Structure formats: structure tokens, C-alpha cells
Image (cartoon, rainbow, N blue to C red; front, side, top):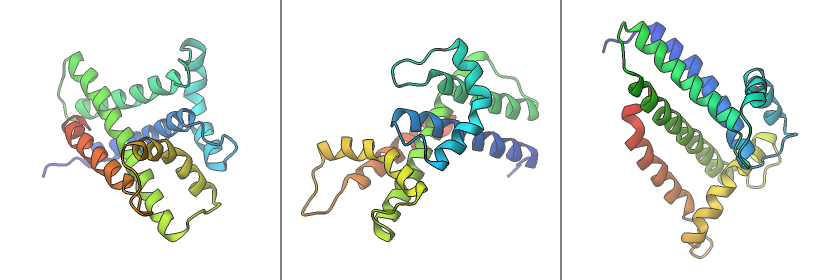
Length: 180
């Protein structure tokens, strides 16, 4: 395998920041507790870029388009840097497709980890009052509600996490070739 450590470093740094930006977007979409210390940290980490964008890009309903544009910009910059470091060139359509698909892939990844944490917390510490546990619960609650409308519980056994994991895994497999 011909891996460049500098490419890996770029991908790790930018993907971590993309994760934080997507987390901000999800927190606003799910109307999670703004006063949660973790939410406050996410807002502080992203406000440097989101606040100037908000002056130019208005929100559409509950969707914070400034955060979405920032997520696309971070993903596009990551792709551009990786392609440039490898000494290649790519058409504009390549950047557009890989930016949208890569951002969706990372959003699904965020939900995958949130669901995994939620399932583990339901076994280990159900009803936990930790800020992280409460935030994960607020993020995953809309997924659970949507899925539970279609798949009812069976004698107290909730099968919705299995269906959600399968759906996320299926969508990630479709988008995996486009993620950098």
C-alpha cells in the first residue's frame, strides 16, 4: 500500500473538523439542548467560520445553511489538498460529486457512532444524566421515532436500532467509493 503520512494527517485533521461542523448541523436540526457543555464546545469551535457565513447565507427553516456550506467547504478543501499532494488534477465535476457524497458519508458516519453509543448506553447506563449521554439521546431520538413508526416493538424488544444500522451501513457502502 502506497500511503503518504502527510495525506493521512491532512485527512484526519480536516475530517475531525468536518465531524464537528456536521455535529453542529445535526444539533441544530434536532433542536438539541444548546446549554449542554458539549453543544457549547461545538458552537465555539465552529463559530469562527459559521457566523461570517450566516451574514451572507440565511437559514432555511431549521436547516442552518451556513453550517452546511461550511461542511461542504471543509470536505472540498480536504479533497483539493489530497489531490494536490498526490500531484494529480481533477475536473470541477469530480470535486462537486466527491464533496457532496463525502459529506453525506461523514454525516452517516456521525449517525452510526451516535447510534452505537446510544445502544451501548441503553445497556450500561439507561437514563444517564451525563451531558454526553443526553446529547446522544437528543441526536438519535428522531431516528428512533421515525423507525418505530414503521417497525413496532416486539414484547418490549426494540428492533429499530438494527434497522437503522442496516440502513446506515447500506448507504455508507453506496457512498464509500466517493469518500476521501
